[in-house]
Image 1 (spheres, one colour):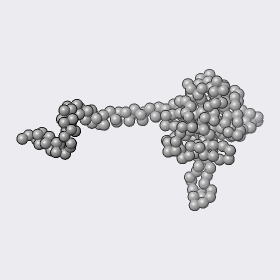
Image 2 (spheres, one colour):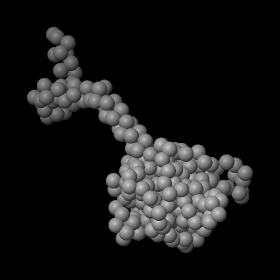
Image 3 (cartoon, helix red, strand yellow):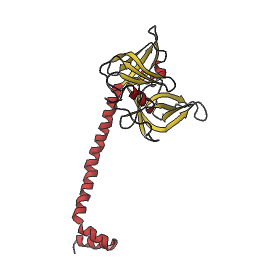
Image 4 (cartoon, helix red, strand yellow):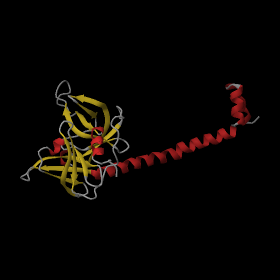
Length: 256
């Protein structure tokens, strides 16, 4: 008796007769499906994973090009502050925090490419929500990959920040959402674990698809309890949905 026959009899003894007849009848089809599944696991899945990795890297690189270092000056041309911002259109519209440009008579935006732009006009400011929308004197600027929906983010989702912490242009950090709607006073923020530092204010908080979901606004060092003095901090961002309606009212879609 052949090995195949022995295997068939053994299989028949293990499974119900109806299921055995089904497997036996569709043996060729099942074999082909199994082979295709093995091929997919060995060849196709790694290709798709590599493609996804390349896609996310490209999104990151494109967004980095659109993140600016902002320098704020008073009317004596003395620099009074430095922060971050990101262009949401190719026509020089930039989003940042209000406190980055507070009391500024002039603002200059530097890109990592070496390009720089001067402020043309302030299109919108809101001190309470800490948002500023600026129009720079530019006809063609890099722009981010689009505006996400901060109402849909979930705890544990991967996020990354792009900005200029401590004057280091085009810096990237990664983390997760630790609270999607953290209330502090009368305001709601996205709390996340990706490290930010002074100078990061006004930068972008992006989701895993390269969409901006927040404006990195502040970090609060742990100053009480057993963790006092440690390097950990609580990082916060203004939800991008706080900005989208204002942009739309001014004819800005946040798309390229």
